[in-house]
Length: 185
Figure 1 (spheres, rainbow, N blue to C red):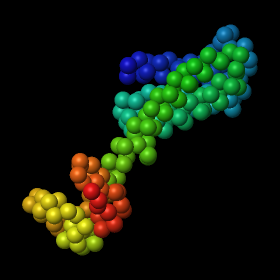
Figure 2: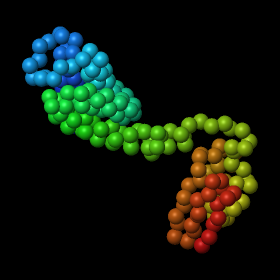
Figure 3: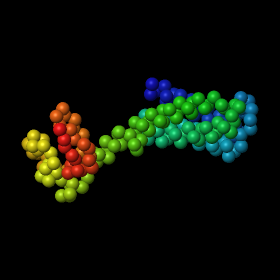
Figure 4: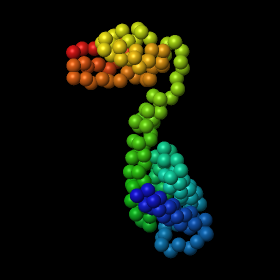
């Protein structure tokens, strides 16, 4: 599937080069009936380069594909709209590019679970304010305190937000800090 998308993007980029070739007089293209100005030829060329960059980033930099794909789809659609009667079917390729970019955004974008994991696992300061202390364990039930002491949590840095525990007899309401967490049966 990955190579199919790449080939489709490459073909779409090559078709964009036809628009810039007609604008700059590099090729006589009778298929394109409407004249293309030099300025729009640059838009066609930039669209082609962005589509090629999106195709390459699909393999080289998948986390950034969504941004390049979105930008490529916008510029490409702008170029297509300037020659709509001749290039309207390029919109299908742009819609597919937008779908792939949207999926990439949800997988790797700034609000994705991947980005949240990177933020939560990034090294933080190990100042005394970020270390787990006995005071952090005080609101916990005695079995949980014993377990956490046994595994050596004391003196370790906090790992982001507190976890949500769902045990049959013990439930934790999520708070911003372990001391704010309320326990109930």
